[in-house]
Structure formats: C-alpha cells, structure tokens
Length: 316
Image (cartoon, rainbow, N blue to C red; front, side, top):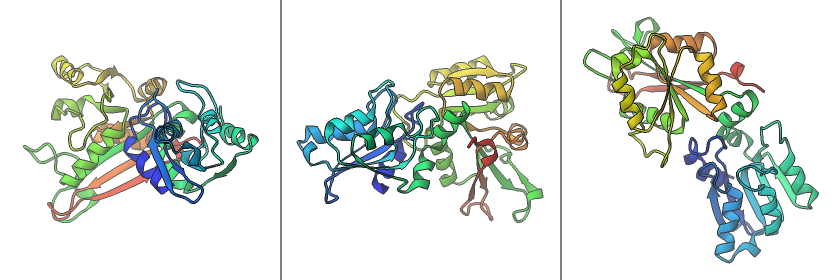
C-alpha cells in the first residue's frame, strides 16, 4: 500500500474530476508483478492499467492480490467498472485503503467483489489513503472544490512578532520566501485545478500564476478566477494569462465562484491573494487547508511552514 500511495501522489491535480489512485499487483507470496496510477480523466483506472500491464508481460495468471489505494469502482463512467476487470482477471484477493466517499456508490465495489467470492480487505493505511483523495471526497459530498489558502508572512523589525508581520514584500521585491517555500508554492499550484485571486494582487504584482519551479502535468489547463467587481484588471494582462493556458473567469463574489468551480469539476482551488481577500476566507471559514509560511528568523534562514485543516468547512 505504501508503494501504491507513492506512485499515486505525483498525479494529484492531474485526474480531475476523478481522484488519484495507485494500484499494485502481487503474486500469492507477495512479489510485485506490476504497478500503475490513474493519470488522467477518461483514461483507464489504476486497477485496469496494472492488470493490462500484467497481461502484456504474460504474468496475469500469477496475479493473486491487487492492492489499491481506493475501493474499486462498480459503476460505468467514462471507463468500464474496475470490478469487472478484476473479476475477468481472476484476482483472488483485493486490498484497498479508503472506501469510495461518493455517497451515490457507497460500498458498491467491495460488495460486488465479495458477492463474486473474492476476498476483500479494507482500511489498510486508511489515513494516508483518505488524505490522498481529500479534495475529491470534499467535492462529491459538497459540490464544491477543496479550498487551499496559502499565505506568506515576513517580519518587520526584530524577531517574529504577530504584531510586526506583513504579507507585503519589501519595496522592489516580488517575494521574500526561501527557495524551498517558493517550490512548495508551485507544488500547490500544480495540484490545483483553479487559482483564485483578487484584483489588488494582480494590479500590484502582475503575477504569472504558472507552475515553474516543478514540472507541471502535461496538458493541464487551469481556471484562473479573478475577483474584480470594478473590472480594473488590464485586458492585456488577461490575454497574456490566456496565452499561457488559463481559462479565465471574472467574478464578483467568492461564493458564486466556488459554486461555479464545483460545477465545472474542479477538485481543488488555490487561493493566492493579498491580506484583504485572504482575511475574508479566514473570517468566513471558507477554507479547508491553510498553508502558513513564516519568513525565517533571521531572514535567509529556513522558513517555517504550517498546515492547518479546517474540518468545519468539510462535509462529513
């Protein structure tokens, strides 16, 4: 299961509106025959892929156990049900981590496999498996994307003091965080289906919002939500962002934006904004995960990064 998680994690943000999933095929004595991850919506799921790999290399008859991070699906979508692929392959034992959180298909995969006489073991490494699909689980339960809010704070004066912290970079600079923190910010962009910002951030910083510090998902096209009631953002800047691959929407309020993103199948939205809009998300409890970056003290030393999960805004 650790191996299945390891191969699935790099594909967070690439599979929407599906969740990332990893699968490993084993012999009866535990030897790995193949592994695969779901990489894009519309393509075969991880279970079907790993069984295809074993078929192509002539080892399908040796597959005894299939280990999957998520309960195999039992419904027809863009691809056939994974349960049927498992049954046709003659798998004897299926091990999975998290149950499918979609209330419309609850338990369907596990029940179908058990009814067919396959041994099913569930709940293995449950917490990391649930963490892997957290945005998907939130979306299928609420209809809205998982909201990740990133804020970075630098100190003013001596020492780290909450009363002497600001999100504004020093004059003449566009950032003040360390290279590691900058890489983290781009990792967050990579896994997001949409980025949400305010007109103030655009007017002051002219940000690109592209993924540059890490390799991006090939062909990934994100939504860029601009909260701009007074339509102050320059049209040339908007055109430049469209040219870099963004689908851009100008919106007037946060609630409407989150609802619309959910309807478009976005699993996660990253909020990259200034103090006012970030403060609004915090005050109204509209966030699910808050990534808080505190400038190193003294400047130049490693930053402190904290992650908080807001359970109140996550449907159970």
